[in-house]
Length: 100
Image (cartoon, rainbow, N blue to C red; front, side, top):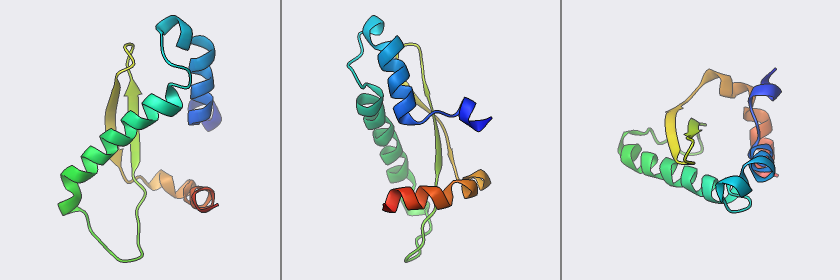
């Protein structure tokens, strides 16, 4: 069921390239380029805004879930950021994928 509702960036990029890119005048691979960069800018801005309030512990980390929305004009909006219990399901594979 999750596979039907959550797409990877690569799958979303392929969808946009195949069905939207030309008609909306987007550059090819907009998802992997412009969208990914904008998401990173938004997350960086948010973390800088709260960095003095975040706990720091040597050799520890936390995974933060970030939900974004792309509107009809392809503007990127941050919906929420949080540390979710459901991330525990993806932590092992995410860590392995990141460190590989």
